[in-house]
Amino acid sequence: MTISLRQLEYFVTVVDEGSFTRAADVLHVSQPGLSHQILALERQLGGPLLERLPRKVRLTPAGRTVLPHARASLAHAQRVSSAAQRASGIVAGELHIGTLFSISVGVLPSALAALRRDYPEIRAQLVEFRHTHDLIAAMDAGLADLAVGPVPLEWEGPIQPIGVEEFVVVGPAGDALGGQSRVRLADLADREFVHFTMPSGLSDYLDQACATAGFQPKVSLRTEQGPSAINMARAGLGLTLVPSNIIPPGFDGLVLRPDPPVNRELCVYTRVRPDPVTAAFVTAIADQATIAPQRFPQ
Image (tube, rainbow, N blue to C red; front, top):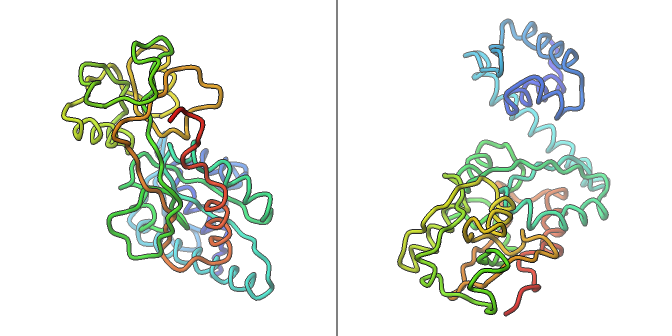
């Protein structure tokens, strides 16, 4: 019996994506070709690994048993490849980067551009989450090679700080708060806020900041994404609190710094000592990440 790494990769991707259609898109293969490889793997292992449902797939008991071994085999193959690359002086490979949606918008673009420029043989794949708890769980499960996010309270692997992210209050251009650069959050207790769908990291930060200021925010509406909250606030649907680095260039709405400041420290963390591919990204993000852009009045 010969099981190929490709078959294991296809099986793991179908599980992670939840359907053959999405997995085929991620793998850049045809759906019939993907199905053929999965069926071949199931024949070799003596039974079905996946239950095909109308809109999703579900692991069979055999699939649940095989999945961790498939992940381990793929991780081992990546380590072998990395060792060979280290020996030859080549930095190349695939890098799965776990992060939060707000960080992928505001922090990662410049770092990924630098990585592509300096290490064209590295292929980066983002794995995005709404909450830090989900990001840490994904790292524990081996779904990403490294994480870019808030500093975890408990983590046994290496942690590399990359900067402090600043939050700002956003609203419409004609708001009564215009003409000032800072605002006490306590003075906003009577205002409505464009909040974030729970649970999410941004909803936690808004709630914590308001609680520290002595009030619970009045919610006008909720959205999942920071850029959507910015647009809603600009349209006058309420104020919002977002990382300053996700505000687009040329934004013509109200932007105020909270007093006292609302910040979160960001870092890169890994399970083990970074290999050359991971180390290349850590260097790129430390050099290029736009954590706190200096384009708003002090």
